[in-house]
Amino acid sequence: MSAYTANSALLSVRDLAVTFHQDGKAIPAVKGVSFDIQPGETVALVGESGSGKSVSALSVLKLLPYPAASHPSGEIIFKGKDLLNASTRELRAVRGNDITMIFQEPMTSLNPLHTVERQITEILSLHQGVRKTEARGRVIELLTQVGIRNAESRVTAFPHELSGGQRQRVMIAMALANRPELLIADEPTTALDVTVQAQILELLADLKTRHKMAMLFITHDLGIVRKIADKVCVMTKGEIVEAGPTEAIFTDPQHPYTKHLLAAEPTGRPPKTEKAARTVMEARDVRVWFPIKKGFMRKVVDHVKAVDGISLELKSGQTLGVVGESGSGKTTLGMALVRLIRSEGEILFDGQRIDTKSFAEMKPLRSEMQVVFQDPYGSLSPRMSIAEIVGEGLKIHGADLSADERDARVAQALEEVGLDAGTRWRYPHEFSGGQRQRIAIARAMVLKPRFVMLDEPTSALDMSVQAQVVDLLRDLQRKHDLAYLFISHDLKVVRALANEVMVMRGGKVVEEGASEDIFDRPKTAYTKALMAAAFDMETRPGGAVSE
Image 1 (cartoon, one colour):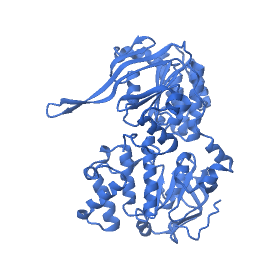
Image 2: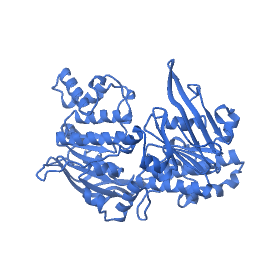
Image 3: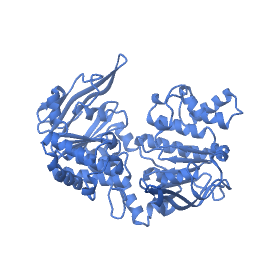
Image 4: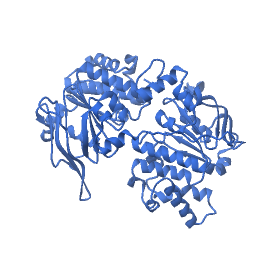
């Protein structure tokens, strides 16, 4: 498929195939993939989950689970040497030295028991023979280079003591320690806030230029690709269906799948709220303070003000979007409203105070207040069938229903979210990420709630699946007159769903109002920085709290 010339290529992948062997079956994951990366060039592999992007990238360094994985065909030529046929010793010399890799989730790559200094020093001593006594200066230099402030004081920190953005910066510092010629970045910004994402992308672009480094960038986010890549390879079902210069792919896509990806952004506007609509959820001066205890007697010396004096009103058929960076208090606010954590201040549901009710007294109201979480896989029991998962709430809140009536309600809820009711005897692992999120939504909807808290329900999904879930949520809202509290750092999704928007920072509201006003005419520097990061992938001063 690729039309690039290979004569000056730093990396040349030719006719690469990957097959996984499981239970006596051969499952092809990558079929005849070819692409080249020139020195100093950024090539992006783009596609949805399961397209074969990461498998292709991991093949470059032979990091797949062999012998379950095999290569029926292909060559991976790096500086004239075929890595597929290289010995373990030859590969070891290339890995982490000439070619390095950073992953989506830094915590899986960082050792939780070792300090940042020890982990970077280990790389320097292994590949460059740097003595431990000499390494500290180089570690501080690397951390400063990737934008970690007060690097001298952070070298002794453990991974859990760093924010998500800081951990990703440490990963980049480790990857750059040996000045590699090629950096493979596998979804390095997917799990980050939009402001941190913009910072990391700027950092990678700057480091690439400074070190004259080539980059293979794997992502499903086309906005990132347009910002960072020189060339794009679009993948689906294990094949590259279109490849070429970035601008050409975006302005004149040829393949139907590329056109589908480019059109897959959440669009549309939320349903109009009726002025006469009934108020479902109301909060007045809600506070959630966590005590900080010190000393032998565990005396309270201060408080973490996760939510600090927030008031809101949410009507039937309305969506309130709550946005802000990680740590701003968005989820804590949502948990307080549905009484899953203790809080101070008045909370009213359907006109009656619920903040004074005990958890036992809240039980009858739980069917009317539902939660959909970010990670459906984490919230769905792997040991229960879909019928059991979706119908679990009905055993408590629909105890008067017969088994057949419960089953009919489950089947109806699944069909309502676009799933075949015949699949309800299967288990969560048999479904894709988007399907699992639909199951989580069906579980909430089967109880016919009036208020639903949606906590980042689309952040872990592909762009096209995001758009489908947004359309689904909008349809369900219109059909059942639901009130949504929609928590997200993805402003494109919020714009498509929310009537009102609340911008949070450090437990407080910095700006709130109608969605059009917030998105088109933001007033505070923080909101403007969020918008620039989300829509233009640019950093602005006064914006980010995360580093």
